[in-house]
Image (tube, rainbow, N blue to C red; front, side):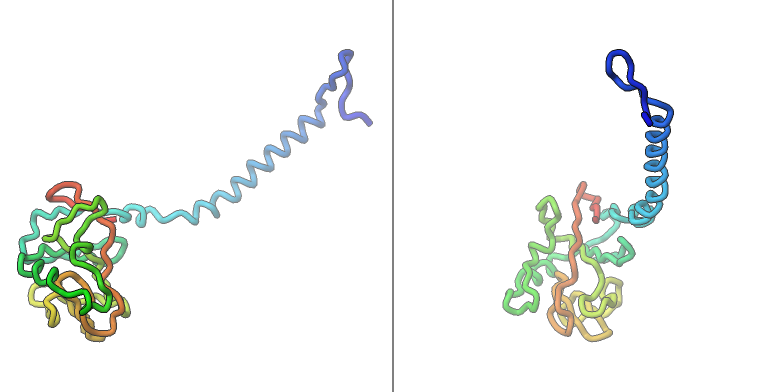
Length: 188
């Protein structure tokens, strides 16, 4: 039972059976890939998530002393245009008084190491139980340190978003951000 015939020069000629075996194997591989692709593709992030992976915010309309909240990845991001008094107050805090020591300078430095102390950008989610602290809107209580106050359990943050009092274990998180110009910041 030879599956191929031998020619005068000693080489074997492929037969129809050889062709069918190769074609069946190739078709099986394509079929397996076609079945696996939807499962593999399902592991990729959704289009709406990818669209929100970075946002650009125009800083021009934000006056000194004003704060705004933008949404990024489904979370509130606080952007505060700090006054000179807020900056000086934040810089003057001794590290020994902070439960989670972090300099103000580190919290206002973008990913390109550009320091802009007048702009504080943080994720507005309390690090205790995930509440949204008050203090970003005019008239909100800012707590005894002039920053943000979480009324759920009494955590108080200073003008640099650092935890100063209450059960929150960490400072408000500073996301990755980059100043693309004097008036634009890209978050994410």
